[in-house]
Length: 250
Ligand code: PGA
Image (cartoon, rainbow, N blue to C red; front, side, top):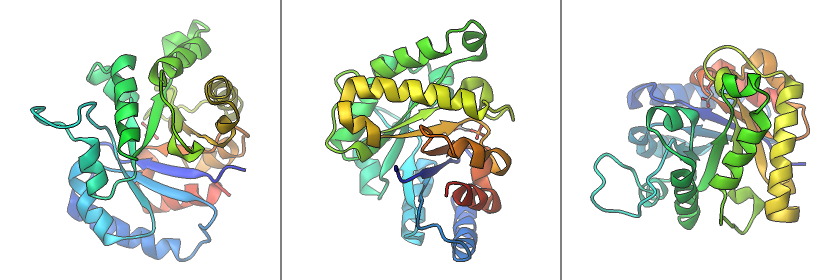
């Protein structure tokens, strides 16, 4: 049984002072439920990390991206070492918004995965098909190719060092969700690729579903064998919704 991971992705929302209030609220609410069975992670803008790490000790924090470079003249970029130094333990790699708006390709994302691992940051590699690709019957093919490219040459010590997020692009921020059976089918295919690459270690790698996961659909999605948590955008901005997702991961 893999310990579930409920991972919020705040994207470019909330300023750091709002985050402080939000954290206080979540901390109080978490006292009222048993969350000992779940790991909770928040991937927040880099500007929020220092104060959020200092303000709490009950959840993990992560970046939403990292540079493939070690350090140097890369204006605007955030390095793995910087994320690690301020207390982040995860970094999202290859979110579809970065693939689309910043033209990030699989080769670049492979370098980012490697860079994260070099610095003991756990990469959350995002994969997922567009609506056109799904309608053309190519969803699995696309996702499998993204995985092979993103993980090319990647090795790690423990299965908890890598997380994969299956995020069908058409379900992100749209209110549309993959059915639990469709999501499970894709996550099982992802597990299949991980088995080819990492043999028995694959059994322990967390695969998250992302794309309009919310209190009303989380329990069904999270009940599936190969869905070991969620990468949650919109619903992670409200403490009540996040709390409901933590409870749904039982
Ligand atoms: P959403 O975002 O939950 O708002 O659909 C998910 C994500 O982009 O990771």
